[in-house]
Length: 196
Image 1 (cartoon, rainbow, N blue to C red):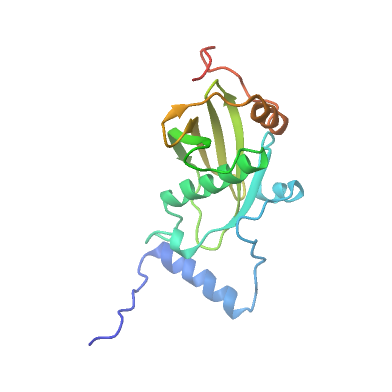
Image 2: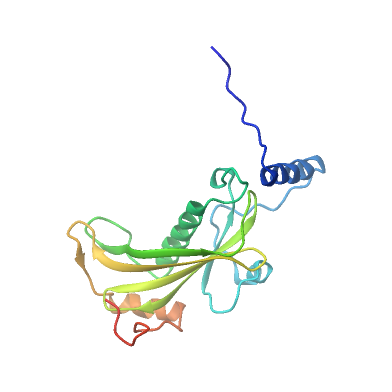
C-alpha cells in the first residue's frame, strides 16, 4: 500500500501565502487570533476600515479550508461568514430560536459583490445590518472588511413557518428592536411599494 500523497503548491499565490506563513513562523511571531466569530467591539472597527452605518459585526480569521487552489478565500466561504453574521445579528435583536414550527427567516434572494481577495489567516470583520423592512420580509446587507470593504453581500429574507411554508408578518416587537439597532432602515421598496 502506498503512503499518502503530498500535494504540492505550485501557483504563485499559493507560494506567496505559504512563504509568508513560513517567514512568520521562522521569526517566531504570533498574530492575535480572534475567538471564533467573536462579536467585535466598535472600538476595533476602525482598524478594519469599516464605513459608518453598520450596527453589528463579528471577528473571523480566514481558515485554510476556506481557501481555493489560487490561495484566496473561495466565494462559498463568504456566504458562510454572512450566514453566521446574520444569525448572530438576528439573535441580538431577539428573533426566537429556530425550529420547524416557529417563524424564522428563509432566504428568497441573495448575492455578493467581491471587491478585494482575502487569503488564509487574514483577520476580518464581518458586519450585518437590516436595510429594509416589509410586511413579511426584510432585506439585509453584509460586509467583509480588511483594510476597507472586501465584499458586500445582501439577502432578502421572508419570515415563515418552515413546516407549513406559511408567510408570517414581522412581529411589532421584532420591528422595534431592528429599528433600535438600525435606525436608518427603509420601510418600503425602492419603488415606494411595501416589500412582501
